[in-house]
Length: 318
Image (cartoon, rainbow, N blue to C red; front, side):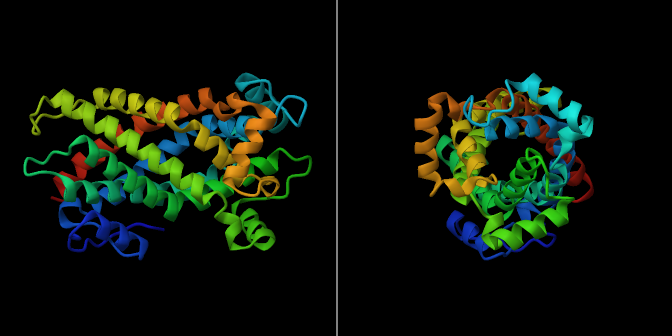
């Protein structure tokens, strides 16, 4: 897992920071101590346990084909009803173990990378301009996509996809991973890496940009002013909504490329073309509503918990 327990000296540039992460080293400076990585990891674990059913429904709807071509669900309510009827309430948590195992390193990398890059880009007043906010968020998203999200999402989608079959093959997390690697090789857990990088990069660029901008607006230029947790949550929900409307088409392509039927697409661009021709442009926004519900709640909870833990860490670990 990509938790970084021992801080190293700060890198001289954003590029060097990214290089250090790619090499598997620790990019975090003393001013962005490893408490931020632990904090992000704890935050991710709590958040995913609360919001996973919406992620499950979103993925099912995105895997659904065009009407008359393998379409199983008419909408959100139908998906939830059929899942509970056939597999019980906990059927909505199919694949949770994958995200739970992966959410800790994912959040640790995300917040650690963002804080590291942010600390190197701030001006003498400790502020970031719009371009640097986007850059810091983009770097965080790319890092988490490569080191945590791609394998985690690929396995999660395959688990959910497997449940759609008449005779599911995967008996559990480790059994499923063994079968995936046996049948598809190591690349089987790295399918859809390009759309995942695009998705996570744009996700975090948008979210951190919106969050940092709203916080600065609330503080009115006073960096010592604290932002109430309820307000942080509201800002997080807004940031989450912005990212959903900004990159759901990328998320749909990522899901298709990571499913069990990904072999019918030559690559991500071929997937885009086939979806456009066979299902129409609106297919790129499948699962938007459940994703909107999950992401708004996800980002709101994440930033609220993150801020709370950081206050605690800063008291006990200055």
